[in-house]
Length: 140
Figure 1 (tube, rainbow, N blue to C red):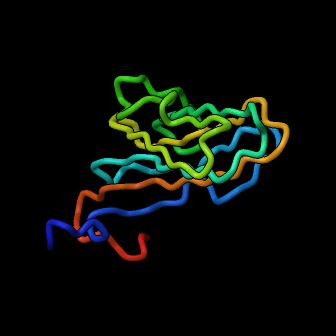
Figure 2: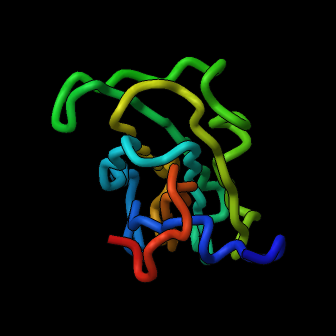
């Protein structure tokens, strides 16, 4: 494989389908099973912020079970910070990322708008480096 070949070395998994959030409702991602991955990160894309003072918070949680027992990830197991992964009203059409280096099998993310009385457009994907290459296309 070429050194410039990224497509065969990553899997993409849906975290948050594109959504327009018109209030402060928390958006909880799909759970990611990290079992077959050596590295994972969350990539978040924000469209327009219609509210002039809205912000978001980002929370990454981990668990040994897929449906329960989630707890906030210790900052020592994050590449980047949840603060840097968040957005504010003047961050229209920008992207952020945050990596996970912990050892729990399941992770999820929550993106919560704050002071949002209008609309914020967002979506997110899990970017995963499989333990075996080449990665499936499309990912399983």
